Length: 546
Ligand code: N01
Image (cartoon, rainbow, N blue to C red):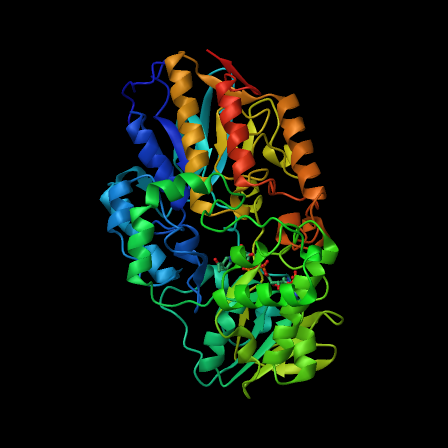
């Protein structure tokens, strides 16, 4: 570790190893390293995986693909990069996105700041020394002035504690921890649990290979056709010619994606026929933003939402031949869009295959896993392998897995005992010099994630620069500002239909997790404006010390 003085000039550096410790080598960690280097700050990142990529490193299940278009889902910070990189398809596959992330790491020589194969186990702040000490599972202890959690929102895979898994004779997998060498299901009887994005994307692929695929569905989910296709080169050229204007315009939109005309009327103002025509257009176009932009109130007015939900339910009924299966697949327990809207390729069509069986576990949960398979409501399903597409301990899991605390003060586990607390999803009161990239309370997961990541990283980098220019060495969110932000995040969510769904946004997928709506759903546009105002107001809500 490097003990030489760095250039921030804020405090004696003799007792620390680096300026900033970054936890995570995914899309956020990489851009953070890039920005810190540009500021002349020393940094080290710890990454549990053997290479860069974060979510795109771990989620290698068949069919894994981004649900945001590739021309959008990419970094904007380097004009050459965004002009030169060629995306082959409308939506990037996991291997293509991972290739891109690797390219970025190489192009900007970022790997030299990353220690791979290293999991951070604790981060402890000493208020007297104003230093974070981060300990790793490899026994290292590193001290730094700042610690930034770039740990991702969907990075703690969760497998339900079904009894009996240890007896199961075959192999089992979690979509979020997929083997790098891939899995061949040819000739096998496969059981897949979970019908969120990961399940819905992987099911058509596994069904093509498996002898028989049993899908255990607890909650039917809305899925729209992705309409993926090779990227049209004329469209690509047009987009690239307008790239910087488009990136800028994206900050004036709620989801951080420009190019969709803002809807001006309620679904209830349209006639049945007008609505049908619009929904048909959106269905044919593919993509979730376009669909949710059909009318201006689909996420705030249940009656309006019902019109869109019923349109999709009818599409499912028209696609799936078995009317009983179609009815089970038609979601009725939550408004459309209040769980992450899935984009698929041939998902509903897959249920017309002879080798696919849908098993409803909404009324009778999975009892147990046996040596030969799985038991539901006294029926045994003989399986050769099991796939858990059961999601993540979202938004808080990765941070709470690390013992984060202040010496003589509180731990993050205590601070978040009743649900996560944050100021802007960036900082937590009581934890000086600790930042999160797209933490709970940020619009990150409800936006084009890379845009939010860049905006959050820029906020943090600019804040460190601000401190350096004032020779300040400590920053912390004020409790009152944090409380006001939490109240605002809740009020904004409560004015929408989002809290009506038992989603991972609410922590509802983890037994015992406090049920608090975690993302900020006021929109990237409002959030960015708020951040800009806070900075213009001298970092209102943050207190600084020398
Ligand atoms: O996880 P999920 P995911 N018994 O939590 C079921 C992003 N992502 O990995 O709804 C039976 O959505 C659970 O049922 P229920 C995206 O943001 C993006 O699919 O809780 N079933 C649900 O069906 C996404 O939203 C992309 O009743 C059980 C499923 O498991 C997020 O990651 C691709 C169960 C979990 O669904 C998470 O998606 C993939 C039990 N005990 C992921 N426990 C793209 O960009 C859980 N389930 C396209």
